[in-house]
Image (tube, rainbow, N blue to C red; front, side, top):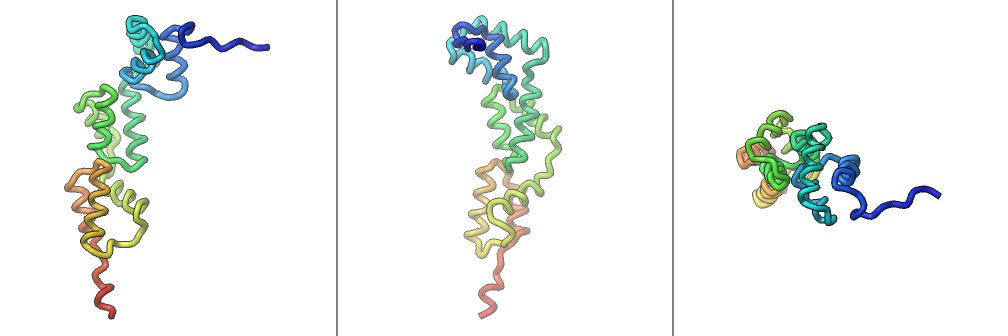
Length: 163
């Protein structure tokens, strides 16, 4: 017949944390929050986190590296990634180190994001170029890189000349 699943009240913080970590990496702040939302005791949760960290089952650095890779691949810039890491309890300085360690090619990432969103075509006017720049800025890319790439991409001003 098999084992009957136990509810969260019967499962200790350590076991529940292991179950969560088996699915994906979690920051310590995120793991603590999830355990406490499930009604587990804060003291037991803190003890479980210390045990998990001492065995290297939970690592904010490993979580940060995973998140940086994921967000870079997803087309996000440094400002976005730093803000997200800070929400997970990772200090801004450490977040910058994690991004630097990933060694992203920012101009290429911006170009790739432009192609994903707008295709290979150039913007037809300044308004379209500004729209593309605003999109990139909202995704967390720095102003200097966005300006450099969107200006280099230019816009097709030959359309009016062909008439």
